[in-house]
Image 1 (tube, rainbow, N blue to C red):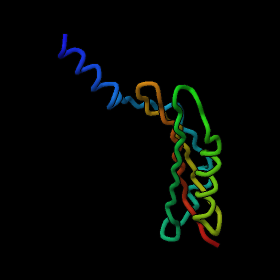
Image 2 (image 1 turned 90 degrees about the vertical axis):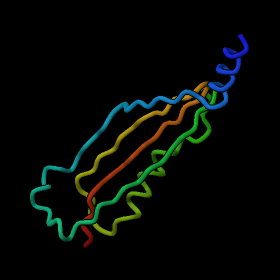
Image 3 (image 1 turned 180 degrees about the horizontal axis):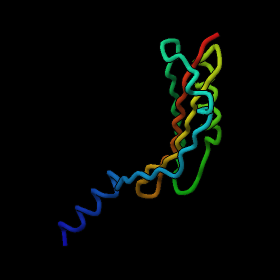
Length: 106
């Protein structure tokens, strides 16, 4: 019984993490064949939101990732993808957003 209690306490303290990708959205590939890759710059932005017991305080994490992506490019952004995923733990989870694109500077 003592071993079971120690194992349960360990799981509560370290958390059982699993990861789920909920959706991936892509756009801006219609003119991808016209992009000169020697002039293109790959850009990427990430942001996270912590949720504990269902309570959320930071609701602008997607806007932050989007603004960070825009700040990395002084031209047009093409071939944009965004991925929304969640990492689960015990009584908490982390929502994650990953945005990628190709920057063509003017």
